[in-house]
Amino acid sequence: MKTLLVKYTPREERSNSKKLLDAFKNEIKNSAIDVIDLCIDVPDLFNVQNMNAYIHRDYLKEEISHEQKKSMEKMDRMTSQIKSADIVVVAFPMHNFSMPAPVKAWFDSVMLKGQTWDAADGKYLGLMGGKKALIIISSGGFYTNGPMMNWEHALSLTTAEFQFMGFSDIRGILNEGMNAGDERVQSTNIQKSLDEVKKIATEWYGK
Ligand SMILES: Cc1cc2nc3c(=O)[nH]c(=O)nc-3n(C[C@H](O)[C@H](O)[C@H](O)COP(=O)(O)O)c2cc1C
Picture 1: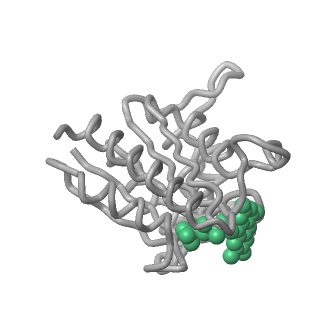
Picture 2 (picture 1 turned 180 degrees about the vertical axis):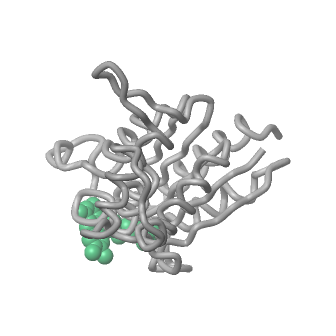
């Protein structure tokens, strides 16, 4: 069994998302662990060269040049990391109501046609069946209830990305209200998220 931990937690030791990810990591049993730190291992963005390489290789099924192959190297490596994992955990803070740009770039890097999803007869097909995903997101505000409910595009988008790739079991934790200005609310919410993280880890790896 293999677990892939994908993190973008630039506040490092102060990050609540990191604390939750570390709590999950402590519960992992009988599994190899692969870690991608998106603050260090920054995913490529699509540009003119790699976009053309991707289209010609994976959509048009053409032979591409050595330079074009090289332009896809990091995306291909990140894609093989997600393909080889049985469980994928992503952890990051909400930025401007969605996922931070490096996290989006990671999804763009691994959501390659013919690798993690495909299309046939006008239908999309996720190729990652049987895998599990856990999404851990911290946010300053509240989105489960209240006036900001419709502004939540972090957990909803991340869930959709994993669904599109066909993941069989997708769990999401929105560790919200971290900037509520009320320490009791904050610590109650963190504890609730920690309990949830541990419950999911026990369910997936055993006691
Ligand atoms: C650049 C930036 C943008 C942010 N945007 C939002 C936002 O749109 N909504 C929100 O609720 N919190 C927002 N926050 C607050 C963080 O999501 C919040 O502090 C979170 O708990 C940080 O996670 P961490 O503890 O893992 O670093 C933002 C923070 C930063 C630095």
